[in-house]
Amino acid sequence: MTDILDLPDWRCLDKRQDDAGTELHVEYTIDPDFCLKCGVVGNLYKHGFTNTTYLDCPMWGRPVRLLAKVRRYKCRDCSGTFLQPLEAIDAARRMTIRALEYIQQQSMRDTFQRVSEHLGCDEKTVRNVANEYIEGKDDGYRPYLPEWIGLDETHLNKVMRAIITDVKARKPIDMLPDRDKSTLRRWFGQFRDRSHVKGLAIDMWAPYRDVAAELFPNLPVVIDKFHVVKMANSCVERSRIRLGKAQGKKVNLAWKRSKALIRMRLRDLNDKQRFNLDMWLDNEPDMAAAYRLKERLFDIYDKPKAEAIKDYDSFANDVPASLKADFHELTRAMKNWRKEILNYFDHPITNAYTESLNGVAKVANRMGRGYSFEVIRARILFNDRKPSARQLRAQRAAQPTAAQETMRCCDLCKGLFYVAEVETFSLEHFLPKDKSLPLKYPEMLVVCNLCNSRSHKSFEV
Image (cartoon, rainbow, N blue to C red; front, top):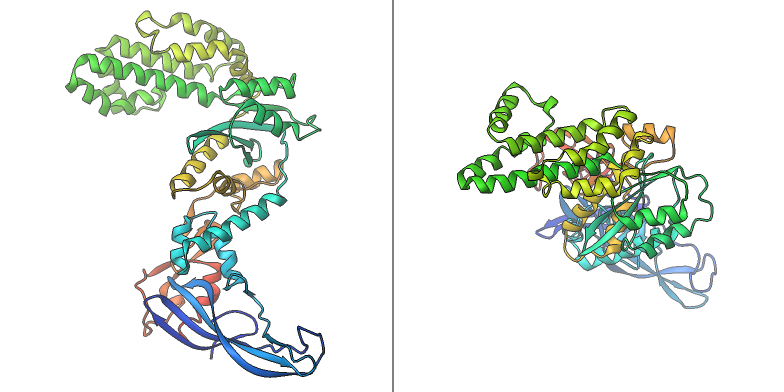
């Protein structure tokens, strides 16, 4: 009989399937040689048994339960009785250690409800395991200060949360409960040695600049060009909406359908797109002026610093009176953040990774309802991502990194795994053609490492 369990010193006696999943009748083959009550060696005898159900990892897309035949022992010396000690079992939670690790891993990637459905347990069980896992990880986590600090925020649960990253290594460092100056000052203040920091890449939020000036004096503070060009695109969009509404509903709808053209760089348009854009702008001078202003701002970042500063300083004066209101947000930011924006030409650092983490945090929040700040923070910090090729290069050049890859769903246990954690196999790789499956599967399967080691044996009992 093949070991379907793939658990050392365990033996499968029988296998049954029902609507709730797969039930394996199992026993542990190692007997104790001393009394757990008094410690006397070699004076035990078997004293019946009890059946206990344990939760295990899913297999072939179905929840798995282990009905364990656990022996009871009695000591001839002290008359004490105890149950057979079981390896690979978390007795307090009535599940296998690998099921516990499965919950810990998947709860950082998937919704608690979906993980509980895969395992065939209550959602509260997953939540409790995840919360305890997060507490343990958080107790042992020690943030650090990188050479280049990325500082941005994201909106979660009606509160703006600051996110701190290692810009060079593309690694999350921490997520704070808010973005207040006192919170930032307290977080950065925990590091006595800040001499190795070379600079900060921040968003246009004044407390970030104030804290940087207070705790990192004389260090460059850089506004990533992403924020500036994004603001320019918003100004053009504001002009399109205002001018389109003035033209009437039909024209406004046509402009709305063509708005992708004005978001693109002129140099990136193909012949057809350029023709359509020219037809549009030739008949709308204000729209053409707004588009040219946007292109001019983009071009500033392609010029040497001396030329860029000259164009930068003359930009606000060249905005036509008819577009002043639409471009007011941009011109005001260019005035108030001039030094930080122009620092980009000396330190072309990008805060794109921090921005991407903002999106990851929002996705984690939208995946399910009722997630606390601690859970979302843990999914950002403690998700055991495998490094991509780009981040491996950053690791060799700087510090150890954590990567964010596209996840794949294992066709057998339904867990979410990163690309490096799964392989693709044909269905026949696991099962001969004359065997029937409990569920329908595609000809090619995406399989995680654990399921790969277990699935070859799952129909041989």
